[in-house]
Length: 281
Image (cartoon, rainbow, N blue to C red):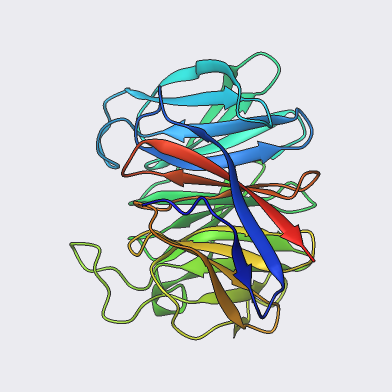
């Protein structure tokens, strides 16, 4: 069941209301990303299994109010997941490669293969146009600078990295937790940050869930989804968490539209997308 009524958050004094939804045309939507430059909402569709190289995946494009512009804006992909734009370029993770797409022409510019990567997931881009991509099952976060690939962090320190977000000189990470072969975790993941200069790690929360999507709202709070539990949390910069949504089947890589304060949540298990208005009192 999807929450469509108002939910009052006592600690954060915010109301959330479902205002529109997309129920047709999508196929295992993994990521929703709103690009302020083009004012487009992009949705990546896995279609088959998340690791299948079947060329069945595609990216859909919508207006900021959920109206379809083109269902298969770019198709022929395998299992596209996280997305992030830099200028007129949309970067997309695609199992073990990064794909760059010209937003104006919908043409693929480049494909960067990342050797030894296992499950590339979310993307972040810093002010110097360095691209970061998480490898959740591989336990790494890669950094790509002008096509050159390096590893930012890896191993237990990475804790099954998933959602990524740049905040000044830090990379904020929503961790799944170290996944077993069946994606279960002995200890749930948490939110942490990595200083991009020193690579030092600081925890923001304790264990919170099998975290996936990560965005920041207009008040400086983090918004993070738990894919397994079907939940979405608000997390303050100090690490206090509040549940704001539940009952979503596989709440994946969320999007956020700053100008209207709208949260966009893909329900990967139901092949739907839901948009929620966040109202501060």
